[in-house]
Structure formats: structure tokens, C-alpha cells
Length: 185
Length: 122
Image (tube, rainbow over all chains, first blue to last red; front, side, top):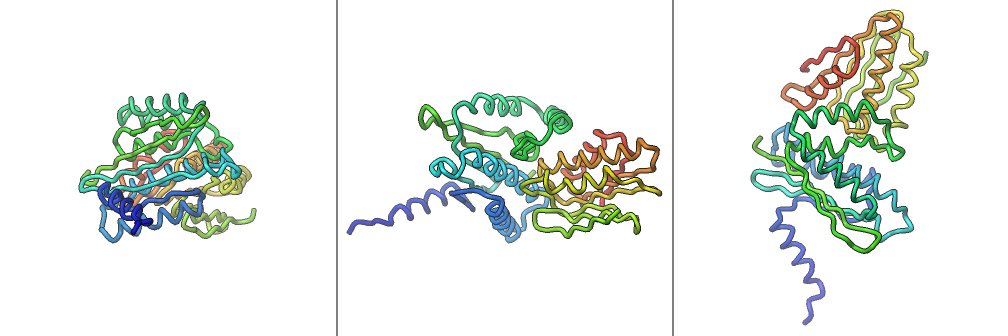
């Protein structure tokens, strides 16, 4: 008999191998953000995670989720294929990995890449100065961001941000971003 | 002036601006989606306020997102302006013991404005 639901088992195996404790795929909003945060917090509470680590994970999650929310508004609701995204948290023995993926316009890649490369080129002190200068020089953009999200993610995680762009067609690409937080810091 | 007294929620802070009882306090979590709209009444209030006695502004945030950090800086700039009019203004930033990131955040804000600023562990 043909196993129509076999993909669920495959998905389950993949998520287990990748140590994913939470994954959300779909449309993002502030309400969804709050729900995802609350689930992740409960998970960390049941495992008695260290307070500082918990707060760092929470912090990176907020910036990541709110980035996706703001970004997906750009595409509008008439573009259903583009305004869904994926968010997940992986938990290994020594790290948390917070990963997001969303579709972006190709003409945004250059600027995004430059910003992320700049952030990855800076050490702890450099990031602190970059954060402070960005904070005191920028107005909130119309989307409500202050351009500080990625810098903050890098500062709180204490590690380089991993990112990849996968071209979908001449107009759009898939943008994957991962922050790693050490658990035994 | 009317007092401001906002109850905290899971994504917005508790805020009290109460000149009669001399309480100026923001506490809890701040991660609203639209920070500019949430903080506008607070910023407007501070811009209009002229204290008759010492103003101790207490910040006891547990967590804030980066969009809120811009609003916190704007509040501090309002307080700096009040100080520059010759008023007595002190900002006290409280952080939970062992919360290094919030301690560092307080120290960074203190470097961005010219206002007497204390960073204290709760």
C-alpha cells in the first residue's frame, strides 16, 4: 500500500537528527511571535537553562522573528508564495541554533550581504561601537526597525552570523540566517 | 499634567509617570511590534513636563528589543533636555544580579547622554 503520509516520518527524522526543538513555518505576525517565544521559554524552563543563556536565546529570537514580520509586510498579502517564512530553534549539547529563512528581492541582497559581512568582521568592542553609533544616528525606519537587529543578534550570540542566499528566480532569492549561542558560556 | 499609568503586558512594559507621588518608572519587558506608536505618548509627556523637584527616573527593564532601545534613548534625550533647563534629574538603571547584558546595556546608555546616571544591581 502506498504510504501517502510517509513524509511525516521523514520530517520527524530530519528534525530529530538536526535536534530541532521548535519549528514554525507560515505567515508571521506579532501574535505568532509571542506564541513562539512563549513556547521556547517554556521549553527552556523545563530544562532549567541558565538565566543568561535563556535571555540571550530570547533576545536573538525576538530580533529574528520581528525581522521576519517587518520584512514579510513588504511583500503584501497578495503575494502568498513569498510572505511565508520558516523559523526554528535547534538545541545541541553545547549550543542553541536559531535559524530563519525567508524570501527576499534580489536587489536587497547586496546591501544585506554588506551589512552582515561588516558585522562579522567586527570583534566584541567593534560591535559595541557599531551598535552605539547606529543607535544614536538612526531614526526608526517606517517599518519600525532601527537597523540594529543583526548587530544585536551578533552581540548577544557572541559568534559570527551564518547566512546564505539561494536564488529562486530573476526576481527573488531565499535568505537563510543562523545565530549560534553557546550553552556552557 | 495627567499621570501616565500603564499596566505591563507580555510585550509592553509597565510605565508610571506620576509627579504627585514623584514616581517615574518603567519596568518589565519591552518588545512591542510598533515601538514608535507605543512610546509616543511617553515621549510627548516627557517633552512637556517641567519638574518642580528632583526627578529620579527609574528604569527596571528585564528585557527590551532593539526597536525599544531607540525609544529608550529618546526618553533619555528628553530627560537630558529637562536637565539642561536647570532641573535636577537622575536616571537609575536597575538590572537583575548576574544579568551582564542588561548591566552592559545600562552602561552604554549612560555613555550616550549627559545626565547623572547610575547603574545598579537589584
